[in-house]
Image (cartoon, rainbow, N blue to C red; front, side, top):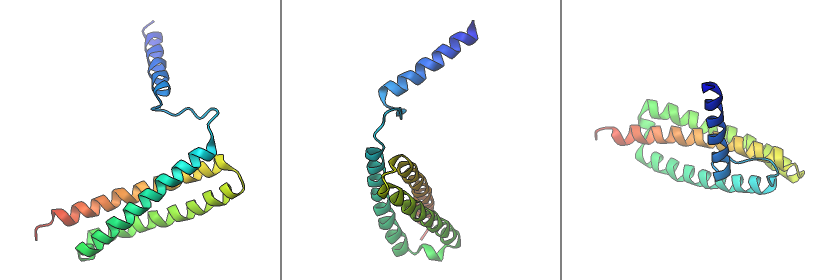
Length: 130
């Protein structure tokens, strides 16, 4: 009986999150709109990455060997994001918006990895005594 109660509570919590929009239900979603929204988000992240990279270059991250290594990895993540973006755009041109959305979301994940690495570099640079 306890297990059944726990199971029902878990189902209720999941249903509540879906109803509130915290977990999007993909049934009947407009993938073209999701694709466009994700691309817009990715473009915003890309802009912020450029701003932060300029700031870190100005701060001289290359002087710190660890920071330079992390920047190399962040650049790799951005390169992967570019490759995935090309796949998403190609699929969108064909009208395959579900697949294009999934690739755009993969691009988002690569960009987030790059942002995390840039934040680590920023913390390394700003926490060093001058």
